[in-house]
Length: 239
Length: 239
DNA sequence: GACGAAACTGAACAGCGTCAAGATATCCGA
DNA sequence: TCGGATATCTTGACGCTGTTCAGTTTCGTC
Image (cartoon, rainbow over all chains, first blue to last red; front, side):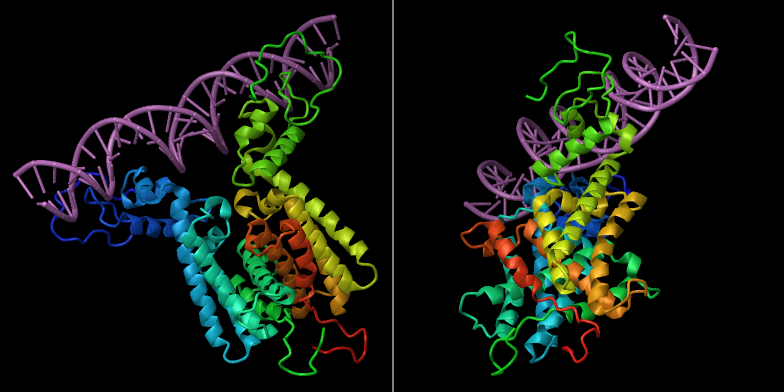
């Protein structure tokens, strides 16, 4: 049902305008696609959404755009190159959601941290395969500088909030408690997202459906994380 | 360099004893392997250890034992069948480590929970690919009853400790706080393990090496998890 | 309008998982 | 001790995959 159009071209081919690709999925009309790079990324995201990370193939991405299986190599080198591009976009979206959570959290840094957690898991549930891809380094070019930058940006959003909570300034290097705070918060939300996406919580959900269960459970889980506050409140709890 | 022996058999073939396979890696000498099933599992674990989950192929497993690529099908059906077997053994080992941590923790249930976390991450670091395989349901037969049982056993170990901490009996159904406790603890250790294995913490490690960093960081991270204790100690901390 | 560069094709290759049919060993009853 | 039933493994093939390479088509620019 996907093979809608045979390669024959019934008089199309305008040849003047640059109305090249109007979204992935439509077979090609011209020899030069016009924006194959973007179209491939779109097709990849589409396939990931339908079939998951394991189900993605480079050839199918090319097929959906109506392009030869060798075409992607010119833009991405190999399959890892294309997937890395998708992962970069994913990290950018993730960072956006974290910052959004940061705003939602208001003045209290601990509330901001929790809302970042909601943003993190929200992203994972909204784009499951993309999220899993982002942390499946076996299929990515981990040395890609853009990927590194995008990943670090997400990390930095979390880190700055931890710095506020622990009373560490924005400049001093992360000390052990600060590091533990970042790693702990990250681990918790990441593990929650990962386990949820793999269906490990499925047996526990009630009648309201999986997503309702997860969204109701998440705040309770996040509440278990207690990053010790720095000495803004003299005489506060010490340990 | 693996094709050490051509199919010709220079007078071997004892024919009486059952000294079949002495570990994976040695090419086959007889038409019937003797214990192909176990040998395949061994080879699979070997390959997983060397090349990770993405690098595993069924044909290579067969090749290492000196058996045709179609042979595994008779014992496991398909590749997911073999990997499921490996995952089952992984869950059993994981459960063992959790119970071991439980013993290490002594009388205090919170200490037992922490030690289970150490066991969980310890298993992941000891068998990285096996651990990742166990939670990569795209490559497993998730409906396999033995896999389900093995997974539930690990979960149950964690759950019983949470029941103790929250003061819930061993029989009553998990209430919301208990559920949050299980999910939170699981999420945290799982996320930590997963992120560590994917190398996401690599930039943060000091000079002592990755493993030393992780093992020193883990207790600090686990300390951030505070599952509210049930009312065993009247007047105790409320939150 | 010609020409260099960029984009894309077509055919090929080795490797993959899996299937059907045939070969071989083991088991078990006569 | 033999012989057939049965479990085990092989052979050969299929369609799929990612990738390479030589060739074709188009674009951009003189």
